[in-house]
Length: 526
Image (cartoon, rainbow, N blue to C red; front, side, top):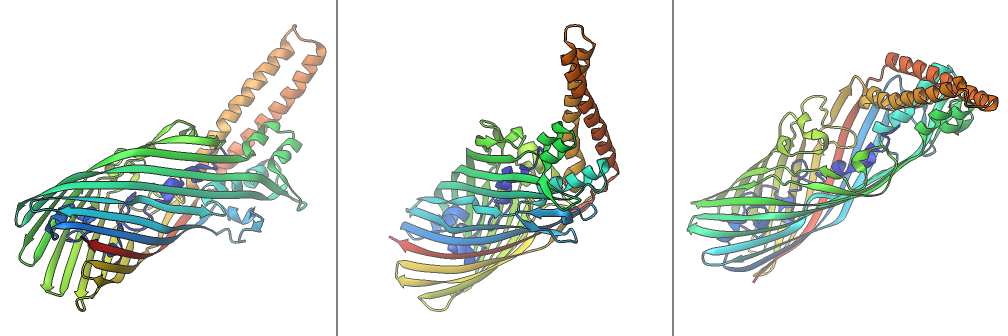
C-alpha cells in the first residue's frame, strides 16, 4: 500500500472552500457578507475586499472594519466497493458495519477567523486595505481515515484468499488523518474618481499559504480462520513470503507546505440614479507550495522534502448591482465566475473539471430606524463537476449548495456600528460511481510490478550462485533455499494478480457536507 497516505497528504484540498465561494476561495470576508452575501456592488467598508472601487463613494475620511467569524463544518463520504469488502474490517478497535457500507466523517472547525478592512477616502483619490483568510480556514480531522486508503487494506484478506481460501477472514488497522490549511491574504487598492459617477481601483493581494498534513496507518493485521489476530507482516512471514511483509508496513506522513503568491485586481464602480453597478476581476494567482517533510514513508515522492507543488488560485470575475427601492430599503444581486479549469493543480487535476464554478447571489437590507438595520441574502454555488467526476475524491470534494445569511447592524454611536450574523449552507448530495473503486487495480499493479521485478532480480542472483564454481556447497545450499522461497513468492504473486483481475472492485462514494458560520464585527468612521 504505497498510497495509503495519499489522503493525509492531500487534505489541503479537503480543507479548502471552508465557508463560501468557489474552489480554493473564501468570499465570506466580513460579517456583512454573512448577513447578505450579495456584496459585489456594496458601498461600505467591507468593499475593501468585495468592491474596492465602491470605497470611493464613501464619505471622505478614514473608515475601519474588524470582524471575527466562527465556522464549523462536517464532511462525510459514504463508501462501498467490492463484495462488501469493508465489512471485513476492524478500524481503531471498532468493527465495521456488516453490510459493507461505511461512513467516513471529518470535522473541520475554525473558532476564530479574523479580518480587517481599512480605507481612506479623499476628494478624488482613495485607497483601501483588507486582511483575511482568503482560502482554507481551519483544521479537518478524520479520526477513522478515509475509504480511499482503507480500501487498499480491505483488499489484503481478499487477495490472501486466492492463495489460501478461508485462511484469513478479516483485517485490522489503526489510522488517523489531520489537515490544516490557511491562505492569508493582504489586499490593497488605490482608486481615482474619474467622474462623480465613475470610480476605478487597481491593486492586488499578497497570499501566503501555510499548511500541515499529518496522518498514519499502523498495525495492519489480519484475522485468521481461528479468530486470532496477527500482524499482516507476521502472517506473510509465517507463509514463507518474507518479501510481502514490507508491503503492509506502517506508513506515516508529517508534511508542512508553504508558499507565496500575488493576485492583481481591477475594480470598477458606476452610480446612476438609484442604481449602483460594479465589476471586479482578480487575475490567476500562480502559487507553488514547498514541502518541508519531517517524515514521509508514504512512498509518494510528491511529498518529499523540498519538492514544490502547483496550487494556483483561479481567476475570478464578479458582477454586482444594488438598487435603492426606497430610502430605507435596498436590494442587491451578484454573479461570480471562477476560472477553475485554468488554475494549474498538481498532476493537472483541473483538467477533470467540466467547467469553472459559478455563483448567483441576492439579498435585501432594510433600515428599521436610524439605529437598527436588518438584512438577509441567498447564494447558490454551482461547480463544473459533471457526472462521476474524477476531480472529486473522498480526500477532496465539493458539491453544489445553497446558502442563506441573515443578521443585523446596530449603530452604537453616530460613527460606530456593530454587526452580527449567521450563515448556513445546504449542500446537495453527490454520488460518484466507479467501475474500479479509487483505482484499486492500478494501485495494486503499481505495488506488485516492482515486487515482481525485485523477486526476479533476486532469483537471478541466487541462480548464478548455484551455478557458479566460486561458492562453497554450503553457500550454494543457502542460495538454493532462498531461491525456493522466491520461486514460491513469485508463484503466489502470479496467483494474486490473476485473482485481482477477476475480482470486482466496483463501488461508489456519496459526498455530503454541512456548514455553519457565526460572526460579529464592528465598523468605525473617523
